[in-house]
Amino acid sequence: MAPNIMIVEDDKNILKLLRYNLEKAGFTCFTTITGEGAFDILDAQSIDLIVLDIMLPTIDGFEVCKRIKKDDSYSHIPVIMLTAKGEEVDKIVGFELGADDYVVKPFSPRELILRIKAIMRRNMPKESYRDILSAGGLKIDIPRHQVTYDDKQIELALMEFKLLSVLIERKGRVQSRDVLLEDVWGIAADVTTRTVDTHIKRLRQRLGKAGRQIDTIRGVGYRFRED
Figure 1 (cartoon, rainbow, N blue to C red):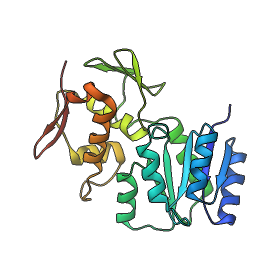
Figure 2: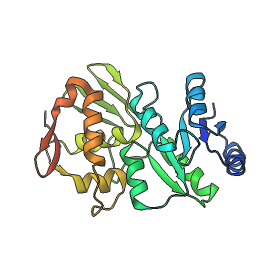
Figure 3: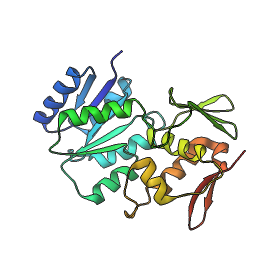
Figure 4: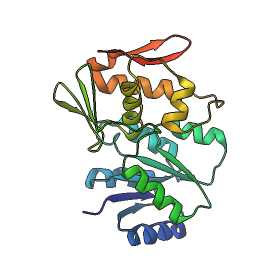
């Protein structure tokens, strides 16, 4: 079955270009020109990835992303922000809201497709992980992109999954915010952002009791406790 991609873009020419190229690449596309329409599609269809423009009428893309990532029904869906805004601060805002990638217009459709495929493969950070990671009752199945705690499945967004995988792979070792920014998000360490803290907070909430095993090392970073 072809992956379902939702495109939220109010420029009809760009929307047409995106749909043509994505369908040619083998994806099934659902399109809308408004943020409100995005939620109508999410309620009606099973969506695997969202390509989301920022400059939308009534509800902008930042707000749409924020609502998606706060809703347990949709928060696991990867979001690629697509926008004419290329300032560093806009990228930071997008990542802090939970976006998984950021593409600036004008863009190459081929590059966007490669980014989508990379996210769909759930490619992991730099280290070569084992297929199965486990710690403190948590089990992470890398190929299946599944996390379970005491045999109960936990839904995580892509970046939360990658963050947890890094922490467990390096359990017992403190990971600074700079290291996590570089290895999980690919953001330069000299960028000032609360992205890591925001995602750690969200990750702890999703993990429930298991989230207590993520320690905050004041002034340094975070550590997943050893068994």
